[in-house]
Length: 249
Image (cartoon, rainbow, N blue to C red; front, side, top):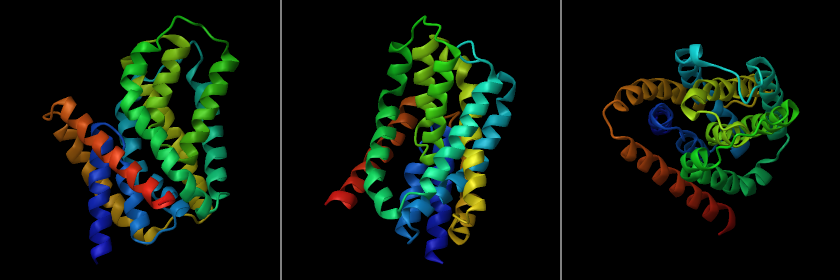
């Protein structure tokens, strides 16, 4: 009973964080591992549990989805989906022991993007018009990361698109949300087909995440952005330190 309550609360917090500023997996993933779910299965289960909230957000912003760096939405979506499939299959091919060693570094990458992302989005802007093949190749790699782990992949997409095209970040947000959801959708499908979801732990977390997303969306209208960002960074940094300690000390 305690585990169910803990998983619900973790989903509640993670869903709220995703609605506010992202980074919900920094809460959901360690809690799943703490209740005994192996790390690879925990990552897949976390992705599934937080997926409905991403779908809801993408639907809200669907009218704003647009081309990226002169490349159409359909080819961008196609390579994102292909990358998501590749990343999810790669995750399921990784042993929990290997993933335990990699996880702190993945968390560090995600935390770094949470810290540096907004600055990179400004400083990396350029007026390049790269070839379509370059844009699609970069997007495929981002799709692989999204399917494999996915922490802060949305910020990585915005930073990459800024570097490649120098376009307005705010206008690309709907496309970013749609592409993250696309990568997660195919990853979730692969995880379900492979039987990689810990359903007993997943269901209370889904319930919490849905409630948290609703609460977070309303709370975000009242809390100042610096407070939201500060809370997210503290959770991300703390989780990263804990997992480095767990893996190496």
